Each structure stands twice: as C-alpha cells, then as structure tokens.
Image (cartoon, rainbow, N blue to C red):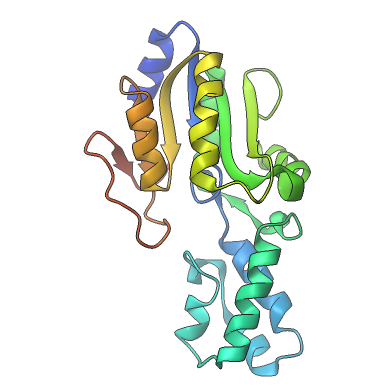
Length: 225
C-alpha cells in the first residue's frame, strides 16, 4: 500500500493526500480512559475499576469495558454517557491521545515526497481547534508548515459526514487527490466515489456501529506500522 501511494504521489502534478484524524492517525483510547477516570471520582467501585483499566481495553465506546466487568445502574450509565459526550468532543482530554503506530512516519514520508497533506477531521473548530493543532504538532505530524492543511468542522452542530462531503471540493482545489485514509467506511466510500482514480484506504477495524460495507475499490489495512 505504501509503495502504491508513493508512486501515485510521484505521478501527479500537485498530489494531495487526505487523512482522517481520530481512529485513523490518532488513537483516542487514552482519552476514553481519562474521561472515565474523571467521571469515576466520587464513585468508589467505578473508580477502582477505572484504575485497573488500560487504553487497550477501549474500542468505540467508553462504557463497553465497564459493562464487561460490572453492572451499571441506568442512572449512572446515563450520567456517564452525558459526561463523556461533553468531554470527548472538547479539548480538555486531547493530551491523552496517542499516534497510531507508524502513522507519524508515514505522513511525514508522504509530506516529504511532495504531497499536500490534508487532515480532514470531524473535530469542531469551536471546541477542539486550537488544541488539535498543538497535539498533532507535539506528536510529530507536519501541520500548517507548507503543504499541510488542518480542516475542522466549523461547529459541533455540523454533521460529520456532511462536513467531509463539503470539504472535498477544497481538497480537489489544492491539486489531484491521489489517496485518502479513513476509519469510517461511509466516508471511505464517499472519497472513492468523489475521486475514482485515487487510492482509498480503510484503516483498522474501529468504526461507528451500523457502518456500511466498504466499496470493493477501497483497500483495507490494519494500520501504518
């Protein structure tokens, strides 16, 4: 896959490569864990369980590893979801994110080969914009330093899929979109339809419940390592 991307970059006049952020380049498992531990303060049984959990225990939801180990009463479960929804989609816990193994090296290689890198994320600019740029830079990703663009949702009210659909015109304006990387099949399928000549890659297996099957033209990889 990496060799194919590099060949596509070298063959294009002004190559553009689009990357999703959460669960594609960046693991949010540590963010889930930090949010759970903050919520568990004042709840002794939950606090003791959260202390024993590790980022590797988390997948798509914050409560799955908890429910696998203890019963949650409806009131606590509802409160946890509300606390998580507010905290996860803010910049308060972004410092707990970590790059997916191999992702930084791969993006830097793509950038160094001459591609314009577009980080097309569903994070909202009004709640997560400034810290997103800071954390990406601290991880080692090329951000806003020439041929790198961070494209966030204008506000939390904008739908994730709608945001990515509307951003494709901007990516195409920058040059020829030769490759895209996503963890959500619906978005990967959108990219494949929009840029049929490009390489479109579905990264990992973590995606929203009820996601559609990826288009047959979409490549699947476990990660960047």
